[in-house]
Image (cartoon, rainbow, N blue to C red; front, side, top):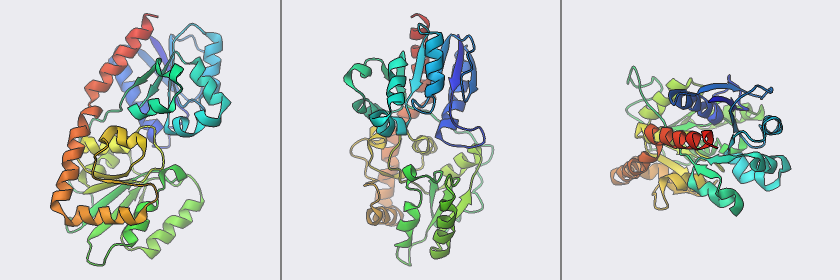
Length: 322
């Protein structure tokens, strides 16, 4: 099939939508289809559209549906779609109606959809393939420290400075150092980043990294900290699982859907004190740290590339026969 992938993310910004789009291009090409990616649909004669983001891609979704109402249309729902936009946006809800199939990135997202929408929804967990030319430790990481990594662009949904706040509460004897990869999407965050570094010698802002270098950093860190208030399906969590690096994370539904109810490394959103205690326990308690690693290993099957490719094969095969 000739497929158009619509993504609202800029090619210049490495974020979850961008990484998802790149991975989908590779999967769908491997499956033998033609695929091209753009921010907007301009009316091309295509067999199928896949749109990331029900709200932000609404104009493209509506345009395609009106031109080709009988051709398959797949809408992939992001975290802001699932936990915000479909609750108040008429356009986002209309996108759900136009879609032949909906795709969500973890099973708990189904609970947020109306019952009549669940039958046309498919759960496809994101996968990660890690391969490095070099496994040398990044210069910023010292083997003498316990290196905690945050990978998040600076926007409210990520609660990006929560790890910095927690690390500021650590006792003097702790060897924890926090490193943050990401881009400020709001100018006010630049001042907050500078202040956080000035007030906390444990916190180090690294700026934006390439995707490959980010994966390298995830693999070499001792621990990944995920402080999100909402997620559709966390790329960073998938990357950590693929790299066998344990995580401390908020206990929001999308992350629990991957790690399981009994994962030992959860804290509640914005609970700085518990986050600090979990960091300290991971650093000081070897049994707890190994428990985190073992629990992550159990969940890693969900992010297997073969599994994701099979899910997309089945979906596209079904739609090609409609």
